[in-house]
Length: 100
Image: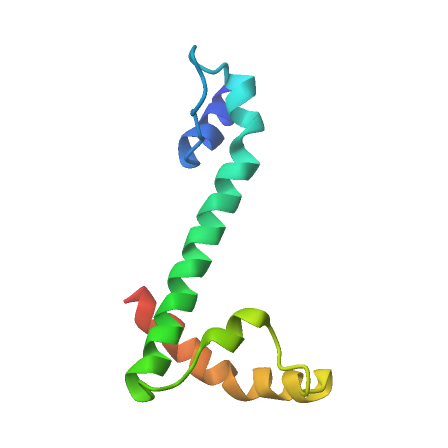
């Protein structure tokens, strides 16, 4: 069990700030979920930034600030789901380019 726990801790960047003494393995394991969330958040930020940069590369004068507010309140949920389906293939190509 100790070897498995240590392997998980080693895979995740466990935050050690505010720790005057070295953290025990149990304390490190307790910080693993936060480390995973930091990784997911940073990766998501990178992908969203890349996509928004692609939008600006084609339409440099586009105003992207409203996108940070979420879905347009005038857009119905059903229509938004259709948009998601429509852009799915483009999203696959963008992700494929990022993985290269």
